[in-house]
Amino acid sequence: MIFVSCSIQEKDVAAETTKPEIGPDVAIAWNHMAYTIANQHDQFLSFIGVRALAMSHLAMHDALNAIYSQFEPMVYRGNAVEASPLAAASQAAYEVLATIYPDRKDTLDVALQNWLARENDLNARSAGVELGKATAASIIQLRKGDGHEKNGGYTPMNKPGAYQYTPNFDWVWKPDFSYATPFTLDTLTQFRSPKPPGLSSIEYTDSYNEVRLYGGKESAIRTEDQTNIAHWWAEFGEHGWNRIGRITAEENNLSLWKAVRMFALINVTLYDLYLVSFESKYHYDTWRPITAIHNADNDKNWDTRPDAEWQPEMLTPPWPEYPSAHAAVGAAGAEIVAHVYGTHDVSFTMESVTARDEGKVRTYTNLRTAAKDCADSRIFNGFHFRFATFEGLLQGKKVAKFIHGKILRPVE
Image (cartoon, rainbow, N blue to C red):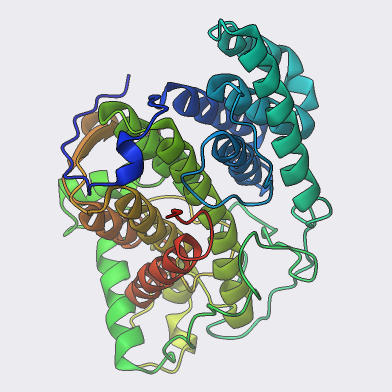
């Protein structure tokens, strides 16, 4: 069970007082449906899931704004004021998800019919169904051949500072950047991270010693709460930030138009940000703390003490270290949700699927605090150096601001 308590000061927006007035239920339901199917498919270990979430909500967004225009469309620019919003949004999500996950059509059929049955006006329902099909088709066409499923090749370099396969893995997850197409970015390098600090620098030394002391499985100085933070924030951003969106939308009865837009922005941002972060990761190709600590006698830095027995608090993911994609996703999620509500002072109480039994539920009253804990968690679980999480926070915020300033903007 997820427990929630929210308190938000919202900006006055004229469109909020203009009909039609519909709550977020259908947006929340289809977000949860898309999330559940994607997670069951491959636990978000590819681009398939976050792409499906982004596409389904973009199709819903364009359908709703063809009925009543509050925000700029992504693709579809038709007009269908007579259409039912519930029918249009549901049909749009259904069409996208049934195309991406055809083997889940039976489950999707049941959900669609349940939502269509809530619209008693048969003419409005029929118009909504046709509109949803049209907006979904435009989004599916937009993303046709986007290279999301293509993986690139990789061979580790055997030199100090370079990424090496970490325990339990003899492979890496690497998008094929020659094919991968973002939703919004001009190029994959426009937000590339600056060069990380050198192995002999003070910044590297300080970060090395911090993660060695705080991120080890046998750490003597990491507090109980820091350990709880490490595990609570370990789940992928696709889990946490979609759930935070559902929680806050329901508690604050966000309008359907705003809720669908929020979910679209969250997932478009996640998709494009992962491309940006991983492009930087493979450009610099830096080693993880476990490799660095085991091989510090080869880094030509007299202030980094090697420890061949050191193990991280949690199992290190199979891709290069710098920058921290997880910190970036935390910062970006916070930026998008704050943009929707007009403040970072958004409160939520939530359970995490990766949390320890003694620390399952956490409460936050500020999104930036949540993003900071998300970044810190990667030091406490032994995955990242401080300079990588710091850069991740900066990168995530930049990308999120770019995206919400470019697409789905409010109309006058």
